[in-house]
Image (cartoon, rainbow, N blue to C red):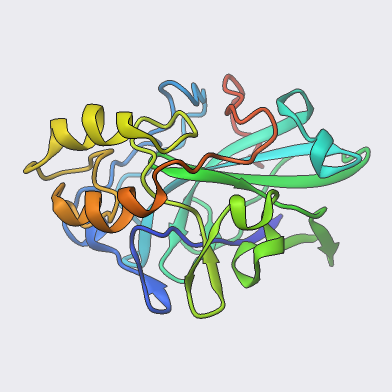
Length: 237
């Protein structure tokens, strides 16, 4: 069982994240990571979005290694699509409970990665600790919580660290391509869109000026920097 906390820069507002995509009925009912670069084969879906506090879907990846620097894609042992709540909690498809994985036999140390469709992914800098059968990790409490430190995520509020927004093409680099190929092509549109870095359901100048521009030139710090797709989720039946 995983109890994970993480924030996204785009929808963050002072202490919590907005739920505009959910409020507008724009969140998809099936996980959106079955396309490149994630190519995740899981079939997670819901009949309806189960909690008004859900911000978006995220993809959780687990790696088993002796050290964070060695936690490459080859060490991946499981993936699962999940919901992110406005308080930073990562929860299962019921919209409330912690994520559960089946048959996790950790040989060395467990490292957790969070992927998002237009934010740079983060990996735990330290092994995820286990207490009472629950693996717990909070990415938001300091620069050193993410692998790569201040290069891996950023302070988005007073003492609150979060995932860096602006990676519209999900290539783990924030560059002119995210502005020209993604943002510009969607500007003026509404919906569940990659260029909507603020995640308010609209692609407009604030996405470019407030999120993409300050982050241009930044890159993901996850070892290999490539989501390792092809695994189905490992959850209890």
